[in-house]
Length: 115
Length: 113
Image 1 (tube, rainbow over the protein chains, first blue to last red):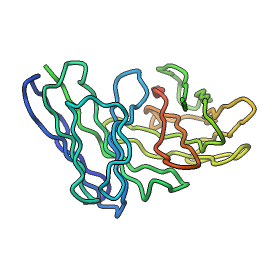
Image 2: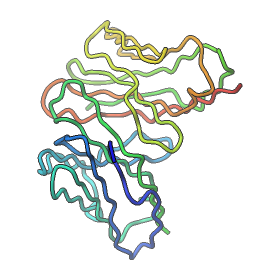
Image 3: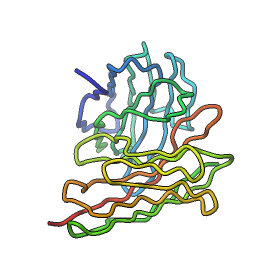
């Protein structure tokens, strides 16, 4: 496999469920990101990890809990979500936080529906 | 803070028409500017970028010029194809410190044959 892979591609969950989104990158990058994509809104940066250390957390509710066990894997643990959390969750990676090229490589996203 | 404003879509064009998607930004200092494209069912991909004022980014027939005086980075293509149908995102990043991208809301382009 190459690039950035996200699983599952689609997830439907109730408000009391606990689930996790997984992201894996095979690019040798050391920075990883979670973005939330909602209709007609800018992509929202949720979390940034560099060398497995969280370096940015943009006021995301605690019902979203990220985990970065190594530089190739990133998880987003979900619990007691709300219907307004339904969105496409995008994972991305980059060579480094300070890369002046600024290029992020994105996965195809996990479409989350909260009932 | 930093922000990016894009024209609302969808933009619907006939094949071979001229395309402009407007993008303006607000940022401190001198950011780098980007256009990303998201084809149906796929993640975002970098389309082009410009890192300083008056730079022109270009790729696949698309162009955008970094205009500091108007804080704009409009995307243009002289002749669109059906295969260009996608969502286009304008974005910026700081050139110092942490450089996570700030995105606009995206503009959907639909090209009809």
